[in-house]
Length: 190
Image 1 (spheres, one colour):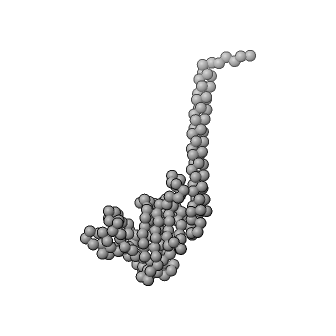
Image 2: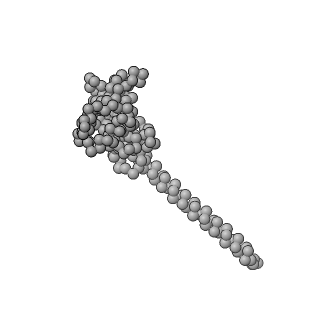
Image 3: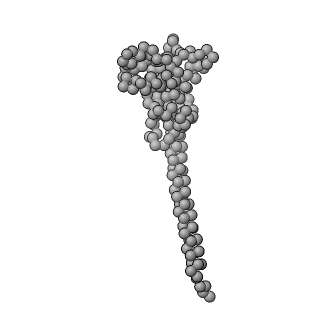
């Protein structure tokens, strides 16, 4: 037969339906979050696969983090004398690199030709740390380079960067448009 639905029983059913509706909404929201995370992870895997198998295939690579916690892939080409640093974030095109550093071996030590890029996220410091490590392994005691006149508009930032990374700045001149940066290993470092 028919059950008579009392007002209190009706309220309980309504409350239960409301709780179940909230659970469904939360579950749908969580499912959307998980789907978005899955999409991002697929894009990261695609980018990493491209970098490893195509873009950097003739280079030594390592995956690491900058000192500011940014996940990166570092590509090292002995032949080209360059480091390229790629963020592993996915909001970038497949080829976009964050930083490139070029150098040469010279009689005086490692000559730092140029550093391009970086975003104040530790890319430059990481590149210099790797260069220092490579120079140390080869028993090279000096890394040096010129301050380019073309970069004079960023000179104060550039000087602070090199000082922070242990370089001495010489001959910067009164206008600081030219000069040299020098990193000398201490005897116990090499």
